[in-house]
Image 1 (cartoon, chains in turn blue, cyan):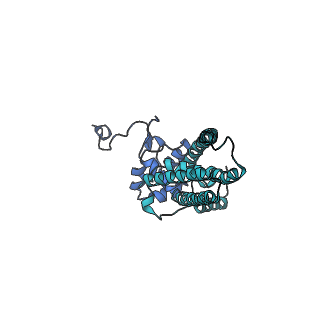
Image 2 (cartoon, chains in turn orange, purple):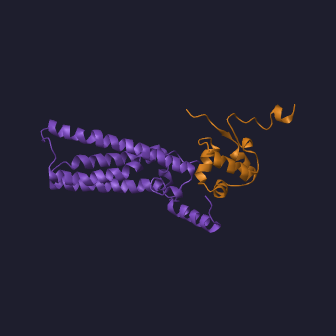
Image 3 (spheres, one colour):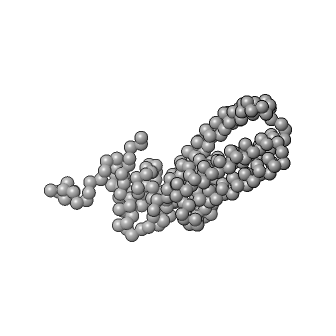
Amino acid sequence: MEEPVHNRVEMLRVERGRSRKDLAEALDVHYQTIGYIERGEYAPSLHLALRIAEHFGVPVEAVFSIEPFAPLSSESLLGR
Amino acid sequence: MNRSPHTEDSVKEVRNRTLIDSTMFPSWRTRARRRLLAAGLAAALLTAAVLGQIDSGLGATLTLVAMLLALAVHLFLRHLLRGIVHVADDALDELQRMRKDRYYMWSYRVLGVVVGAGIPGALAIRRLIGLGSGLPGTVIAGLVPVLILTVATVPTIVAGWLEPDEPA
């Protein structure tokens, strides 16, 4: 069974007030593909992952991870 | 691949035009309903193949009816699938291309079973029930269109069965 790839695509997209269709158009993919990526049902190719990170202006490892992302309110992120 | 901005725009237009972008029949756009249609299409083709072996005018008529029903279900299912198995790869993104490749891979396997086991199996059954060891020319003439329709619609059946539910 394929290892899951965790991502923050939906969080980054919603932060910027973009719809799936907007993001899909910007990345030249179908809007359903964005939906599958956000739900973790599809791990994008390296090229698409890099384009997604570039679109949001963040490092790719801030968008995708093989480990679950820690909640933003976690103690490690708050420096406690 | 380096493309000019104008070429990029025209590629995007072709992509938008070739995939069916429809919201009609929303209640049929679930995996369960698509599987029902895929099973119905397969059943219609099998019925046509069985009826096509009846060497009479009635057999030919019923075969034609079954084939027309199969064609109607195929067109409806193709619409629900947005034409994913029939559009050129240029019109698809990476995920859609991957799914399309998977559907065709399974289609070749299914057709291999149909040709490799289905046809000899049908001939063996005909022999068992006393219809002789061969196929009359008229029966072959009736079954060839069914076989052509089967080859044309198996990718749609496979896609209808395997395509996941659309994300909300």
